[in-house]
Length: 361
Image 1 (tube, rainbow, N blue to C red):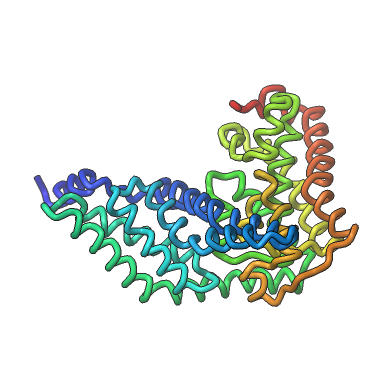
Image 2 (image 1 turned 90 degrees about the horizontal axis):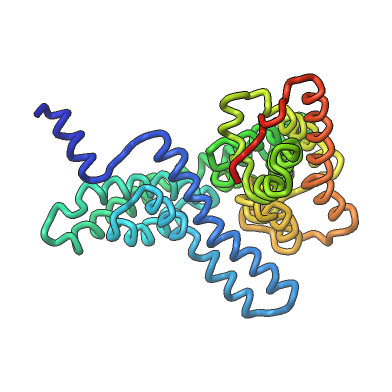
Protein backbone atom coordinates (compact mmCIF):
# COMPACT_ATOMS: atom_id res chain seq x y z
CA UNK A 1 0.00 0.00 0.00
CA UNK A 2 1.37 3.42 -0.98
CA UNK A 3 1.69 6.30 1.47
CA UNK A 4 -1.22 8.09 -0.17
CA UNK A 5 -3.42 5.02 0.03
CA UNK A 6 -2.41 4.52 3.67
CA UNK A 7 -3.38 8.09 4.57
CA UNK A 8 -6.64 7.75 2.68
CA UNK A 9 -7.47 4.52 4.51
CA UNK A 10 -6.69 6.12 7.88
CA UNK A 11 -8.86 9.17 7.11
CA UNK A 12 -11.74 6.91 6.12
CA UNK A 13 -11.30 4.81 9.27
CA UNK A 14 -11.42 7.96 11.43
CA UNK A 15 -14.48 9.29 9.64
CA UNK A 16 -12.69 12.33 8.21
CA UNK A 17 -14.41 13.50 5.04
CA UNK A 18 -13.32 16.82 3.53
CA UNK A 19 -15.85 17.57 0.80
CA UNK A 20 -17.85 20.58 -0.33
CA UNK A 21 -21.12 18.95 0.68
CA UNK A 22 -19.93 17.97 4.13
CA UNK A 23 -18.39 21.35 4.98
CA UNK A 24 -20.25 24.05 3.04
CA UNK A 25 -23.68 22.42 3.07
CA UNK A 26 -24.00 20.05 6.04
CA UNK A 27 -21.83 21.93 8.54
CA UNK A 28 -23.05 25.42 7.65
CA UNK A 29 -26.68 24.32 7.65
CA UNK A 30 -26.18 22.75 11.06
CA UNK A 31 -24.58 25.94 12.36
CA UNK A 32 -27.81 27.77 11.51
CA UNK A 33 -29.73 25.18 13.55
CA UNK A 34 -27.45 25.85 16.51
CA UNK A 35 -28.01 29.58 16.17
CA UNK A 36 -31.74 29.03 15.98
CA UNK A 37 -31.83 26.83 19.08
CA UNK A 38 -29.89 29.30 21.19
CA UNK A 39 -29.56 32.93 20.08
CA UNK A 40 -32.78 33.21 18.10
CA UNK A 41 -35.05 31.41 20.56
CA UNK A 42 -33.38 33.25 23.42
CA UNK A 43 -34.00 36.60 21.71
CA UNK A 44 -37.66 35.79 21.11
CA UNK A 45 -38.20 34.70 24.73
CA UNK A 46 -36.29 37.72 26.02
CA UNK A 47 -38.41 40.04 23.89
CA UNK A 48 -41.58 38.45 25.28
CA UNK A 49 -40.24 38.90 28.81
CA UNK A 50 -39.52 42.58 28.22
CA UNK A 51 -42.91 43.31 26.64
CA UNK A 52 -44.93 41.27 29.11
CA UNK A 53 -42.96 42.35 32.15
CA UNK A 54 -41.99 38.80 33.14
CA UNK A 55 -38.38 38.78 34.41
CA UNK A 56 -38.25 34.97 34.45
CA UNK A 57 -38.59 34.95 30.65
CA UNK A 58 -35.67 37.35 30.43
CA UNK A 59 -33.61 34.93 32.51
CA UNK A 60 -34.53 32.05 30.20
CA UNK A 61 -33.65 34.14 27.17
CA UNK A 62 -30.36 35.16 28.73
CA UNK A 63 -29.32 31.58 29.41
CA UNK A 64 -30.23 30.55 25.86
CA UNK A 65 -28.34 33.37 24.16
CA UNK A 66 -25.29 32.83 26.38
CA UNK A 67 -24.95 29.29 25.00
CA UNK A 68 -24.80 30.35 21.34
CA UNK A 69 -21.12 29.54 20.80
CA UNK A 70 -21.44 26.07 22.26
CA UNK A 71 -24.70 25.40 20.39
CA UNK A 72 -23.18 26.31 17.03
CA UNK A 73 -20.04 24.24 17.56
CA UNK A 74 -21.92 21.16 18.76
CA UNK A 75 -24.35 21.45 15.85
CA UNK A 76 -21.43 21.54 13.42
CA UNK A 77 -19.80 18.57 15.13
CA UNK A 78 -23.04 16.60 14.97
CA UNK A 79 -23.37 17.28 11.23
CA UNK A 80 -19.79 16.11 10.73
CA UNK A 81 -20.51 12.91 12.69
CA UNK A 82 -18.00 13.76 15.40
CA UNK A 83 -17.32 10.94 17.92
CA UNK A 84 -18.86 11.52 21.38
CA UNK A 85 -15.76 12.87 23.15
CA UNK A 86 -15.05 15.21 20.24
CA UNK A 87 -18.66 16.38 20.18
CA UNK A 88 -18.80 17.15 23.89
CA UNK A 89 -15.45 18.94 23.80
CA UNK A 90 -16.74 21.32 21.16
CA UNK A 91 -18.77 23.09 23.86
CA UNK A 92 -15.62 24.75 25.19
CA UNK A 93 -14.23 25.34 21.70
CA UNK A 94 -17.42 27.04 20.52
CA UNK A 95 -17.58 29.30 23.55
CA UNK A 96 -13.97 30.37 23.06
CA UNK A 97 -14.31 31.00 19.32
CA UNK A 98 -17.55 32.96 19.65
CA UNK A 99 -16.21 35.09 22.48
CA UNK A 100 -12.90 35.87 20.78
CA UNK A 101 -14.52 36.43 17.39
CA UNK A 102 -16.56 39.40 18.59
CA UNK A 103 -19.42 40.40 16.29
CA UNK A 104 -17.99 38.04 13.67
CA UNK A 105 -18.20 35.16 16.14
CA UNK A 106 -20.43 32.85 14.07
CA UNK A 107 -17.93 32.69 11.21
CA UNK A 108 -15.09 32.17 13.68
CA UNK A 109 -17.00 29.32 15.32
CA UNK A 110 -17.61 27.72 11.94
CA UNK A 111 -13.95 27.73 10.90
CA UNK A 112 -12.54 26.78 14.29
CA UNK A 113 -15.08 24.04 14.96
CA UNK A 114 -14.02 22.44 11.66
CA UNK A 115 -10.39 22.51 12.79
CA UNK A 116 -11.22 21.09 16.22
CA UNK A 117 -13.36 18.29 14.78
CA UNK A 118 -10.58 17.36 12.37
CA UNK A 119 -8.00 17.29 15.19
CA UNK A 120 -10.29 15.33 17.49
CA UNK A 121 -11.09 12.74 14.85
CA UNK A 122 -7.41 12.22 14.12
CA UNK A 123 -6.82 10.88 17.63
CA UNK A 124 -10.24 9.50 18.49
CA UNK A 125 -10.05 5.89 19.72
CA UNK A 126 -6.41 5.55 18.72
CA UNK A 127 -5.11 5.20 22.31
CA UNK A 128 -6.11 3.20 25.41
CA UNK A 129 -6.85 6.47 27.21
CA UNK A 130 -9.30 7.94 24.71
CA UNK A 131 -11.25 9.48 27.60
CA UNK A 132 -8.33 11.83 28.24
CA UNK A 133 -6.55 12.17 24.90
CA UNK A 134 -9.49 12.99 22.61
CA UNK A 135 -11.06 15.78 24.73
CA UNK A 136 -7.63 17.18 25.51
CA UNK A 137 -6.56 17.36 21.87
CA UNK A 138 -9.93 18.68 20.67
CA UNK A 139 -10.10 21.43 23.28
CA UNK A 140 -6.41 22.35 23.16
CA UNK A 141 -6.30 22.61 19.37
CA UNK A 142 -9.68 24.33 19.20
CA UNK A 143 -8.97 26.94 21.87
CA UNK A 144 -5.47 27.59 20.49
CA UNK A 145 -6.99 28.09 17.04
CA UNK A 146 -9.59 30.39 18.60
CA UNK A 147 -6.91 32.59 20.16
CA UNK A 148 -4.95 32.68 16.91
CA UNK A 149 -7.71 32.86 14.29
CA UNK A 150 -10.97 34.04 15.86
CA UNK A 151 -10.07 37.75 16.23
CA UNK A 152 -8.93 38.24 12.59
CA UNK A 153 -11.78 36.10 11.24
CA UNK A 154 -14.22 38.13 13.30
CA UNK A 155 -12.76 41.41 12.08
CA UNK A 156 -12.91 40.33 8.42
CA UNK A 157 -16.50 39.11 8.73
CA UNK A 158 -17.54 42.28 10.55
CA UNK A 159 -15.79 44.52 8.02
CA UNK A 160 -17.48 42.76 5.11
CA UNK A 161 -20.85 42.91 6.82
CA UNK A 162 -20.42 46.60 7.66
CA UNK A 163 -19.40 47.28 4.05
CA UNK A 164 -22.63 45.72 2.80
CA UNK A 165 -24.69 47.63 5.37
CA UNK A 166 -22.89 50.91 4.58
CA UNK A 167 -23.42 50.41 0.84
CA UNK A 168 -27.10 49.66 1.43
CA UNK A 169 -27.50 52.84 3.47
CA UNK A 170 -25.73 54.85 0.73
CA UNK A 171 -27.47 53.18 -2.24
CA UNK A 172 -30.69 51.67 -0.88
CA UNK A 173 -32.25 51.12 -4.32
CA UNK A 174 -29.38 49.33 -6.04
CA UNK A 175 -28.21 47.43 -2.94
CA UNK A 176 -31.81 46.62 -2.07
CA UNK A 177 -32.05 44.78 -5.38
CA UNK A 178 -28.66 43.05 -5.10
CA UNK A 179 -28.90 41.94 -1.47
CA UNK A 180 -32.51 40.82 -1.82
CA UNK A 181 -31.88 38.82 -5.01
CA UNK A 182 -28.61 37.22 -3.88
CA UNK A 183 -29.71 36.24 -0.37
CA UNK A 184 -33.02 34.94 -1.73
CA UNK A 185 -31.22 32.71 -4.22
CA UNK A 186 -28.87 31.46 -1.51
CA UNK A 187 -31.87 30.67 0.69
CA UNK A 188 -33.31 28.38 -1.98
CA UNK A 189 -30.00 26.66 -2.71
CA UNK A 190 -28.82 23.99 -0.27
CA UNK A 191 -26.67 26.61 1.45
CA UNK A 192 -27.64 28.33 4.68
CA UNK A 193 -28.58 31.96 4.06
CA UNK A 194 -29.30 32.24 7.78
CA UNK A 195 -25.77 31.18 8.67
CA UNK A 196 -24.28 33.56 6.11
CA UNK A 197 -26.33 36.53 7.33
CA UNK A 198 -25.37 35.69 10.89
CA UNK A 199 -21.68 35.29 10.02
CA UNK A 200 -21.67 38.70 8.36
CA UNK A 201 -23.84 40.30 11.03
CA UNK A 202 -26.34 41.65 8.49
CA UNK A 203 -28.82 43.91 10.26
CA UNK A 204 -30.34 47.32 9.64
CA UNK A 205 -31.41 48.24 6.12
CA UNK A 206 -29.27 45.46 4.60
CA UNK A 207 -30.96 43.01 6.96
CA UNK A 208 -34.31 44.28 5.72
CA UNK A 209 -33.24 43.73 2.10
CA UNK A 210 -32.06 40.20 2.91
CA UNK A 211 -35.36 39.51 4.65
CA UNK A 212 -37.24 40.79 1.59
CA UNK A 213 -35.34 38.41 -0.70
CA UNK A 214 -35.91 35.41 1.53
CA UNK A 215 -39.64 36.13 1.85
CA UNK A 216 -39.88 36.63 -1.93
CA UNK A 217 -38.41 33.19 -2.56
CA UNK A 218 -40.29 31.26 0.10
CA UNK A 219 -43.70 32.83 -0.44
CA UNK A 220 -42.99 33.26 -4.15
CA UNK A 221 -42.36 29.57 -4.79
CA UNK A 222 -45.31 28.64 -2.57
CA UNK A 223 -47.65 30.79 -4.67
CA UNK A 224 -46.12 30.02 -8.08
CA UNK A 225 -46.41 26.28 -7.42
CA UNK A 226 -49.86 26.31 -5.81
CA UNK A 227 -51.47 24.75 -8.89
CA UNK A 228 -49.15 21.75 -8.54
CA UNK A 229 -48.92 21.46 -4.75
CA UNK A 230 -52.11 22.94 -3.26
CA UNK A 231 -52.30 23.81 0.45
CA UNK A 232 -49.70 21.27 1.59
CA UNK A 233 -47.07 22.72 -0.72
CA UNK A 234 -48.10 26.26 0.16
CA UNK A 235 -47.35 25.64 3.82
CA UNK A 236 -44.29 23.46 3.23
CA UNK A 237 -42.61 26.19 1.21
CA UNK A 238 -44.20 29.33 2.65
CA UNK A 239 -43.33 28.63 6.29
CA UNK A 240 -40.94 25.74 5.73
CA UNK A 241 -38.30 26.07 3.02
CA UNK A 242 -38.10 26.84 -0.69
CA UNK A 243 -35.22 24.34 -0.92
CA UNK A 244 -37.92 21.79 -1.72
CA UNK A 245 -37.83 23.19 -5.25
CA UNK A 246 -34.11 22.48 -5.82
CA UNK A 247 -34.67 19.21 -7.77
CA UNK A 248 -37.08 21.01 -10.11
CA UNK A 249 -34.75 24.00 -10.50
CA UNK A 250 -31.84 21.75 -11.42
CA UNK A 251 -33.92 20.29 -14.25
CA UNK A 252 -35.45 23.58 -15.36
CA UNK A 253 -33.70 26.75 -14.02
CA UNK A 254 -36.25 29.02 -15.72
CA UNK A 255 -38.65 28.10 -12.91
CA UNK A 256 -36.64 30.47 -10.73
CA UNK A 257 -37.92 33.56 -12.57
CA UNK A 258 -41.11 34.31 -10.54
CA UNK A 259 -39.26 34.25 -7.19
CA UNK A 260 -36.24 36.17 -8.50
CA UNK A 261 -38.43 38.87 -10.05
CA UNK A 262 -40.34 39.11 -6.78
CA UNK A 263 -37.08 39.54 -4.84
CA UNK A 264 -35.79 42.21 -7.26
CA UNK A 265 -38.99 44.22 -6.77
CA UNK A 266 -39.33 43.47 -3.05
CA UNK A 267 -35.82 44.63 -2.13
CA UNK A 268 -36.24 48.32 -3.03
CA UNK A 269 -39.75 48.33 -1.60
CA UNK A 270 -38.20 47.30 1.72
CA UNK A 271 -35.19 49.62 1.60
CA UNK A 272 -36.52 52.69 -0.24
CA UNK A 273 -40.29 52.78 0.28
CA UNK A 274 -40.53 51.49 3.85
CA UNK A 275 -36.91 51.77 5.02
CA UNK A 276 -37.51 48.42 6.72
CA UNK A 277 -34.76 47.45 9.14
CA UNK A 278 -34.17 44.00 10.58
CA UNK A 279 -32.43 44.76 13.90
CA UNK A 280 -33.08 41.47 15.65
CA UNK A 281 -30.44 38.72 15.59
CA UNK A 282 -28.68 38.65 12.16
CA UNK A 283 -29.80 35.04 11.60
CA UNK A 284 -33.36 36.35 11.22
CA UNK A 285 -32.30 38.33 8.13
CA UNK A 286 -31.68 35.06 6.31
CA UNK A 287 -34.72 33.11 7.49
CA UNK A 288 -37.58 34.79 5.63
CA UNK A 289 -40.98 33.37 6.55
CA UNK A 290 -39.53 30.05 7.73
CA UNK A 291 -41.40 29.65 11.00
CA UNK A 292 -42.11 33.40 10.58
CA UNK A 293 -38.65 33.98 12.06
CA UNK A 294 -37.85 36.92 9.77
CA UNK A 295 -40.87 39.04 10.73
CA UNK A 296 -40.44 38.03 14.38
CA UNK A 297 -36.82 39.23 14.17
CA UNK A 298 -37.98 42.62 12.91
CA UNK A 299 -40.42 42.96 15.80
CA UNK A 300 -37.78 41.85 18.30
CA UNK A 301 -35.39 44.46 16.88
CA UNK A 302 -37.84 47.25 17.54
CA UNK A 303 -37.82 46.79 21.31
CA UNK A 304 -34.57 44.94 21.89
CA UNK A 305 -31.95 45.47 19.14
CA UNK A 306 -29.41 42.68 18.89
CA UNK A 307 -25.76 43.19 19.79
CA UNK A 308 -24.92 43.39 16.08
CA UNK A 309 -27.57 46.08 15.58
CA UNK A 310 -26.36 48.11 18.55
CA UNK A 311 -22.79 47.87 17.23
CA UNK A 312 -24.05 49.20 13.90
CA UNK A 313 -25.60 52.21 15.64
CA UNK A 314 -29.23 51.04 15.53
CA UNK A 315 -31.58 51.98 18.37
CA UNK A 316 -34.92 51.08 19.90
CA UNK A 317 -37.91 52.41 17.97
CA UNK A 318 -41.58 52.83 18.77
CA UNK A 319 -43.45 51.03 15.96
CA UNK A 320 -46.40 52.65 14.25
CA UNK A 321 -48.91 51.58 11.61
CA UNK A 322 -46.33 52.06 8.83
CA UNK A 323 -43.93 49.63 10.52
CA UNK A 324 -46.56 46.91 10.71
CA UNK A 325 -47.70 47.65 7.16
CA UNK A 326 -44.08 47.29 6.01
CA UNK A 327 -43.77 43.79 7.48
CA UNK A 328 -47.04 42.60 5.95
CA UNK A 329 -46.26 44.12 2.56
CA UNK A 330 -42.67 42.87 2.31
CA UNK A 331 -43.21 39.45 3.87
CA UNK A 332 -46.47 38.55 2.17
CA UNK A 333 -48.18 41.00 -0.20
CA UNK A 334 -45.40 41.75 -2.70
CA UNK A 335 -44.15 38.12 -2.94
CA UNK A 336 -47.72 36.86 -3.46
CA UNK A 337 -48.74 39.40 -6.08
CA UNK A 338 -45.52 39.48 -8.11
CA UNK A 339 -44.83 35.75 -8.13
CA UNK A 340 -48.45 34.92 -9.01
CA UNK A 341 -48.49 37.43 -11.86
CA UNK A 342 -45.14 36.31 -13.32
CA UNK A 343 -45.95 32.61 -12.94
CA UNK A 344 -49.34 33.10 -14.60
CA UNK A 345 -47.76 34.86 -17.57
CA UNK A 346 -45.13 32.13 -17.85
CA UNK A 347 -47.77 29.39 -17.78
CA UNK A 348 -49.73 31.14 -20.52
CA UNK A 349 -46.52 31.45 -22.53
CA UNK A 350 -45.72 27.77 -22.13
CA UNK A 351 -42.58 28.45 -20.06
CA UNK A 352 -44.05 26.71 -17.01
CA UNK A 353 -46.07 23.54 -17.48
CA UNK A 354 -48.29 21.59 -15.11
CA UNK A 355 -46.14 19.44 -12.85
CA UNK A 356 -42.93 21.47 -13.31
CA UNK A 357 -43.09 22.80 -9.74
CA UNK A 358 -44.44 19.65 -8.11
CA UNK A 359 -42.68 18.80 -4.84
CA UNK A 360 -42.67 15.93 -2.39
CA UNK A 361 -44.13 17.23 0.86
